[in-house]
Image (cartoon, rainbow, N blue to C red):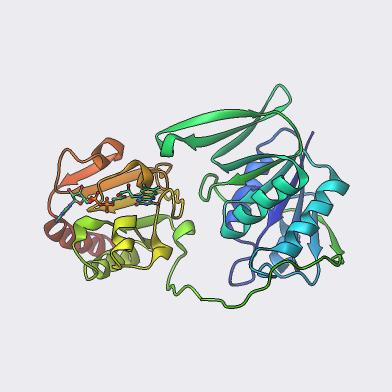
Length: 317
Ligand SMILES: Cc1cc2nc3c(=O)[nH]c(=O)nc-3n(C[C@H](O)[C@H](O)[C@H](O)COP(=O)(O)OP(=O)(O)OC[C@H]3O[C@@H](n4cnc5c(N)ncnc54)[C@H](O)[C@@H]3O)c2cc1C
């Protein structure tokens, strides 16, 4: 049996997040899984029908408790001690990345970040994760348990199975507070979250300025997708850094990743190479992005994109 403590998250509508449903699917792929999902704060109502063994909500803890999730980290560390799971599974979200790393350090546990696949081999946990900036995938045997694992968004299809888990609520402990929020800045976004989007339309330096991002947005809207960007475009101030994809930006694994005027530097590919299909639009036939792309158009985006958008709209009409 593999016992898994899965750290669940809610989305902005108060539902179980897509990334948590993906983590449930990953957990269920392990041998004889016994899955406990814990939520910092009240579990979303939809958690009660998850296909897992139990739900533990830690009442009165908010996911944004102090900006570095001091309380959540302490609560989860206690649960790890009491439950002694084989795997502590988190999404590679802002919350999961921060809590996972701090939890592993504090509790002296093995840590595997940004994994795209989990499996068991001869009783050991095996994780797959991108290496060398996403140019290759490597399998690692996790030597000791409990192991803390973060899962890349989109690596698994969200679980759609239903069940009736046991539900428990525990009181938070009192902890010493080391950090406090002094200011918060809300990310402005309309439409689907970049990490959850099935289609991402990303723009790079080849766009030449901020205005073309409105064309990318039109295409993304037509495809029910989200807009991404290279660091060069973000650094130029053409679009907010919250759209940046790559090593120092967000990791995405959409069904389709459309790269417009992006050269395909390894640091950019680190954030999108696990996309199911990459489509490149670039005027330089020798650009590295064409080595990564399944489909490509060699041409000026100003000519290619409007007719592409018109065709998409025509097909959807
Ligand atoms: C530590 C570190 C971390 C980094 N992290 C990231 C990261 O997270 N994300 C990231 O993206 N980068 C990151 N970078 C930067 C990365 O190395 C590249 O510099 C960056 O990705 C380049 O962005 P780009 O492809 O938009 O620009 P360029 O490399 O300048 O490419 C522009 C492309 O547009 C094409 N083009 C030009 N005009 C047109 C046109 N009219 N129509 C069609 N195509 C056209 C060109 O042929 C070219 O291929 C990082 C770098 C370092 C050192």
